[in-house]
Length: 541
Ligand code: ADP
Image (tube, rainbow, N blue to C red; front, side, top):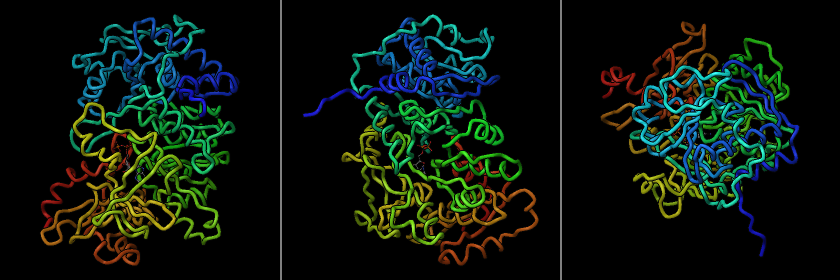
């Protein structure tokens, strides 16, 4: 037999403290820039764990964070699990109703809040049933004026903590270390717990050469918010492996991101496609040195092929397309060419790399179509089922567990095809798939094709009810600046025509100023359907 040593989050920080004490974290906050080392982070973290214990928090207590990506949030990432607490990262962009729901459902005892976000919590404080204290993270020496009760100043609290605090030892690797809620299409958000073991194993997978390959030589900049699936687990892995970190702080604009990439020689950055679409526009207008980037890790929704191509050809920045979800910590697949594919034509290589890729070691998948498991032919569509050691096995106190977790598998609600190499291609979420005449049309495929047109800035495709065909596709397009009078619907349809069978083509194209987005920057089709209600009523057949 082998030794069985618990896999825990504090042990990851202790490793960085010992071996990477000089490595740097550059952090942007509301009013300042900070630079600290891993030795400094470890010192702050021990103080924070100690301070939380002193104010009465105990093992298993849920502690919420309501904050942007910065060094104080990173300290909470380790300081909360370090005293046995559960780090509950709260999405600051949810509605007030959903924010109070998740805080109450998680039974958070204390909330860490960025000073500039305090007004959001003030408005809902009377609804919060379990919160006993608030810790405000601010650059000022004094607390902002607030109607919140029982408020601590983060930095002052830290200084009352003991820098020699010993992280909890009586910890089971299966104990929860983190918690996150995923937005549901209808109803309240659904919560999942992340165990210490899950976080450690997931971090290890982020270091694999054929995954994100995070290493000590990296300078990592997570743009994906630390309130969205733990910034895809990147802060945990970066600390453990000793990668330097750049934390872009509150509301980073594309210009802020481009400057941080240039100034700190960022090697790896990560976020959803809408971030990169906006960054491309910035790179086109300004002049930045992005030569340090070894890759952009992109996931959360499908990365348009045209965007991948522009980054790689024009800016020489390799793209890593990945797939995952809140329930899976999130890493499930990364799109990388296998050795024998490297000699394929440029077009074929791009085709493969714009798919979501194959599962990383440690995750298993199964794809179930109308007649059982689908053929790996790149054509037959089915629902993706997943299992693995960093995949949740239930929603926290939620009846919807029954629908999603069955027979030991997570039913993702994502419809995919699988090619002979095992690469998945996300065709849609089950609810967004367009069901036309008994067949399925992938809105994602049409969107990507439209976004490859030089005049198109963003495009999304939704289902329109239809009496004969059940549903038909409608494309919603935002044109690039200056293109408004230069391109017509017919031209865009002509552009699509050679790429799709006739019945896949959208019945109509509407031009919009903007496409509504979710709290994490994905196209919000539900809001779009509401926005286009009048259009849909007059046109639906
Ligand atoms: P939310 O439901 O709030 O968007 P998640 O961030 O957990 O929550 O989103 C996970 C979903 O995002 C997946 O189920 C899938 O539909 C979509 N997704 C994630 N990565 C990709 C990708 N690379 N391509 C297409 N869709 C993706």
